Image (cartoon, rainbow, N blue to C red; front, side):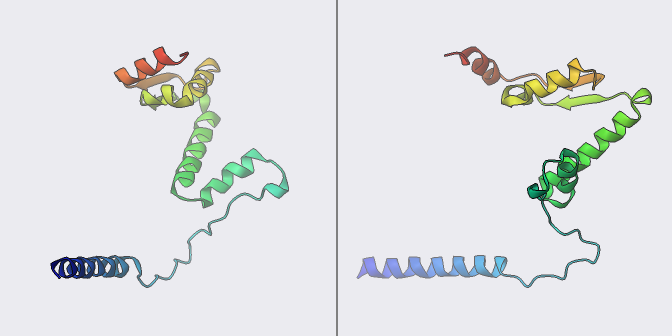
Amino acid sequence: TSLSSSSSSSSSSAGVGCSRATDAVLQRSEKMPSDAKEVRGYDFNKGIDYDAIFDTFNTHGFQATSLAKAISEINLMLKHRKNTTIFLGFTSNMISCGNREVIRYLVEHKLVDAIVTTCGGVEEDIMKCLKHR
């Protein structure tokens, strides 16, 4: 009987936890603001138009929207290239996570004027040493 009583108290605690979670998640929706953008992706049936694809990032989720804002800023800097000094800032892990070629391209084609980065961690050096094993 002690097993059954501990089991029932455990299940009643779980019920309280589920109830709290349900109360926290299941909330009445608020009306969307009239100026809210409709979430909409690119229609690939129209063919591949990279400018249009990047433009649709403005109506994607948070990360894509941030990327779209960054693209707009970069295009603005490139438009005013003669009067702009472009700094590229990144953490060292951007090199070891696969963006090395992107950064190399930007520097090679003089699309950035200065680089500001952090020191790499020892784990990045180890990864580079073990790359060909």
